[in-house]
Length: 212
Image 1 (tube, rainbow, N blue to C red):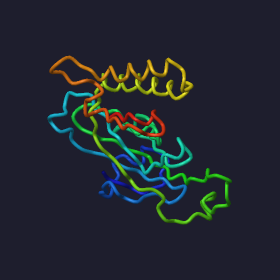
Image 2 (image 1 turned 180 degrees about the vertical axis):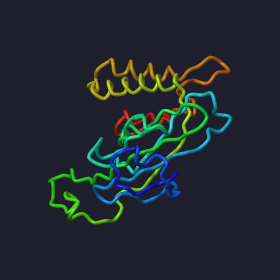
Image 3 (image 1 turned 60 degrees about the horizontal axis):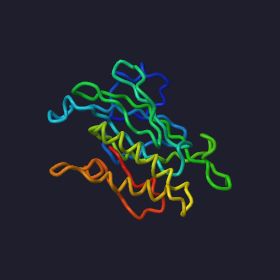
Image 4 (image 1 turned 90 degrees about the vertical axis):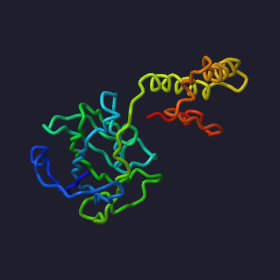
């Protein structure tokens, strides 16, 4: 990971420039500023040939899907890959190396209850202290079958939360989810694989499944 705190408008101005080394835990981004991250590395041999993603957390909070930090990722040629947002932090990885530029915008969070007065609403009045901390820049193996199952389970759990307590369909769905944990002897149930973390007794069942 390398970073350049530059308010440059075009990726062409960034590619090839020197960057300062950085690592996860870096504080970055005074309000309304732009920082550029250059994420580089080799894919470990055991992971080559598998479907991979790069997960980048610029310091997002779970409070809102937007109205905070955001990023736009480019490959080494300046081609746009995709955006980065609080609920969409993955980037596709192709080949045996990672070479990605991320244009990170330090938008301050001003969308709070009651809309109180804040100096963060204008770059002229905003403090120059960093607002965000780089939390993650990791490679992740994508298990497509597990991910598809996770989407199905998420839909079912969301359906359950909208049903009345006495609705018989609620019990049928929950029973089906429990039964889906069963697998032939010697095989691991999809829901028991380490890629799926099941956390019970949460207030919102839709938060019970986390996929990588």
